[in-house]
Length: 91
Image (tube, rainbow, N blue to C red):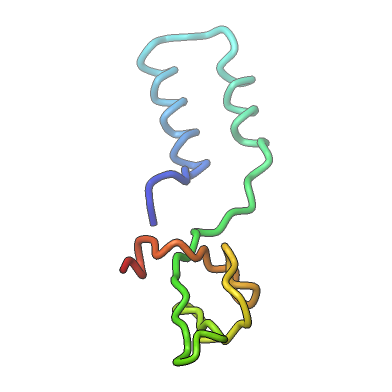
């Protein structure tokens, strides 16, 4: 998984270490509480896939879930994979 998602515990530890090293005594508890009680994002890693056509070109199979569809779309309606070829299924 890419390093785009951060750990709340790691951020809190980094803030506390920075405060300790700097000797800051003004608003450190408020800063820590802002991070501690911030709403977390509900995210999942994007799955990349590609469409594969049948012999007649009438139906398309998702390379991530193997389900057949009757048209190409930007995302697989069955599993939600992003149909751009992408990292896992580059052409």
